[in-house]
Amino acid sequence: MGLYINKRNHPEVYKNEQNLNESNQSFSRQDFLAELISDQQKANNALNQALAELGLRYSQQEESKVHQWNQIDTQLKDLRNRLEKNEEANQQLAMQMNEQLELQKTAAEKMEKQEELQGSVLKRLDNQDALLDKLARQVNHIRSILFERTNYLASKIDDGYKLTSSYVYKLMTGSEKPLTFFLMNHKNEESQKKADSL
Image (cartoon, rainbow, N blue to C red; front, top):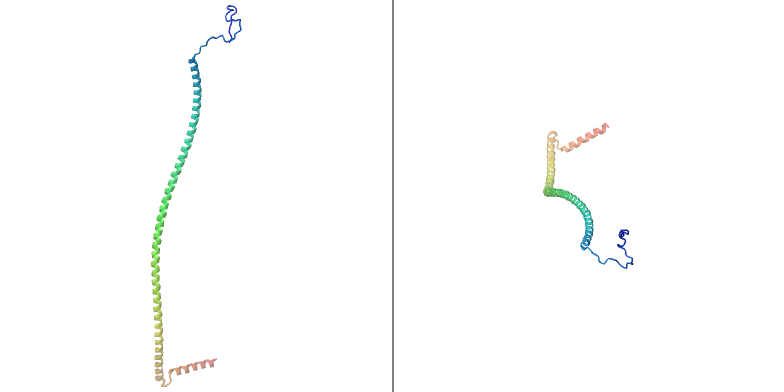
């Protein structure tokens, strides 16, 4: 707003006919406290704005951290569940391995007993083979003895038969010819009869 001059009532007030070379203000009064307050207000406003931005960034960062911590917590829970399942699986596997070891131990003991039994059976078989060989030799020996005694007895019986039959033939016929001669004549007569009948 410009300088108002009341030309009717006070025409000479604030009127200068000369050229002004410089400012007509001879001194100025400054209020340092007001400037300080103004500067402080500006600084406070800038600080508040910076704090607001920082608070916003902190909130965003906090939300990001919370989200990350939630993800980490979920991953930890998942990992804990997997570890528990793995622990259960490991315990079951350990139990199965213990059972398998017991079965292998039992099987080894049975195999050891089986080997001992087989060794005993093999020894018995060896003894049985030796006994069978001995028995076979004894049977062969008895057979040879029986064969010899049978031949001896057969020859003795044959000699006794011939002697007895000759004696009986002599008593019955009064002939001095042996019985074998009579038997040969009888056979010749029978063969002659067969030839005649043909």
